[in-house]
Image (cartoon, rainbow, N blue to C red):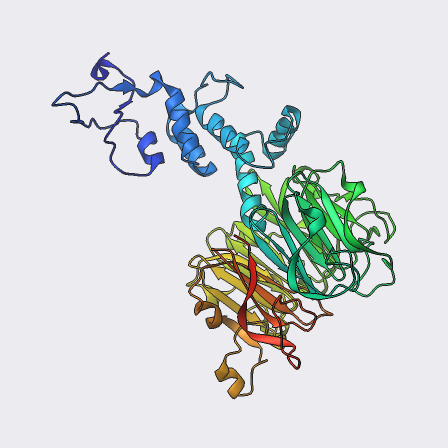
Amino acid sequence: MDASTSRTSSVQFHNIAEQPIAATIVNSTFQRQVRHCFGNATPGEFPLSANPSIVLHVLTGCNLDPQDLATLEATCSFFRQPANFAPDNELSLAELAALDMCRKRAIFKPMTQEQCHDLKQKCGGSWKLVLRFLLAGEACSRREKSHAVAGPGHSIAVSSKGGAYSFGSNSSGQLGNGTTEEEWRPHPIRSLLGIRVIQAAVGAGRTMLISDTGKVYAFGKESFGEAEYGVQGSKVVTTPQLVESLKDIFVVQAAIGNFFTAVLSREGRVYTFSWGNETKLGHQTEQADLEPRPLLGALENIPVVQIAAGYCYLLALACQPSGMSVYSVGCGLGGKLGHGTRTDEKVPRLIEQFRTLNIQPAVVAAGAWHAAVVGKDGRVCTWGWGRYGCLGHGNEDCESAPKVVEALSNVKAVYVATGDYTTFVVSDDGSVYSFGCGESSSLGHNTAAAEAQGNRHSNVLFPEVVTSLKQLNERVVQISLTNSIYWNAHTFALTESGKLYAFGAGDKGQLGVELSANQTERAIPERVDIDLS
């Protein structure tokens, strides 16, 4: 059939001009292009609707963003019509492409048909929204990617292949190596060999690791709810033990705060252990409760993609049909809940300031007393207790609602990390900025010139480029720093090639590098002898 007589848009097999795939498909009037590959013969053209399976293959193979798929549907009726393909003949091409891309995600593959349907309804009834939910979770918490966690006195590193390494303080067995002896050399946790770890969380004296099958392994202090130096959790566990109370929940992330622990399920449900007084997290349970309780309130029917825990509070990045949003719950001291007040919240409450600022949150970070968010447009917001300049606004004032860090207005941020009055920001070009408390050399600004001037521990009120990392000529993709009010801080910088660099306090071996006899910290980033690629 000659395409010139057809009313259907057509496209040639070959020699399509280079342009974004969305633009190629959406344009309802395709320009004819002549290919000369077999003599001067001109190949026939085919109508787009004659072979939608090819279009579906292209859409899926290009891994289009959910927003691109939505744009296709909005601008071209062809993509809104039923495609008549399994598993659902009524689905449009755009919806089928989104479903195919969902099936590629590791946490989606083992889900039953009923679980998939439930997740679809929870996300808003669209596979495009499910895809956005899955992609957002992968992007903001680095699960299923290599990462390192700078804990209070000890550290955990996870390779891209799922191997877990531990080093540092081990008084409660938190290294998981079967002993209580501290170790500065990173060693694999041998009892977990053969288990692929996708995410790690650390607290004072305890560690939690999550496998790709949704299982949670814990070691160190037994309790999930003790304070940093509380009397609970006196029993220690020196090798990873499966958390039986979570065996029926497919967990993808954990966050350890003071007095409580939170986990996030594959379906976006948040559960918390302990600290369940009704004035705190809305549970009428005891502090030592070892059973996970679903977080009540606004997030009961809204899927969450990331959780972050600070000192007695929790942040949740939620995925709604209208966009991404942040909820907070717990202690409001210092304004760290972001609602414009300093009052506590016993159930999750939406932080409304992001709507006012027209920011779509993409990554959340909860420091001990302050918090931060990176928006989809690369802007950075901070709020909470501003001591030592950790909010980056040039002063030490508290901010009870998110405020844009104007000093980073020319930077497109992609990642943020917060600790005890310290903040790090990673830009899209791999540059790193830090500000806040300069103790323990954990900000990375302690150059020889700084030492000569006697200000190696000075505080930084505005974001400054960490030149010691810039000099590595390595693209940094993740920063982790100690989030504890009782331990001297240390910091990790992970590069795109899988190299790990450490600086800050190292008195317990938590840096993973050997220090001299009279040395307690490293001012300049040093390579940790471990490959996480």
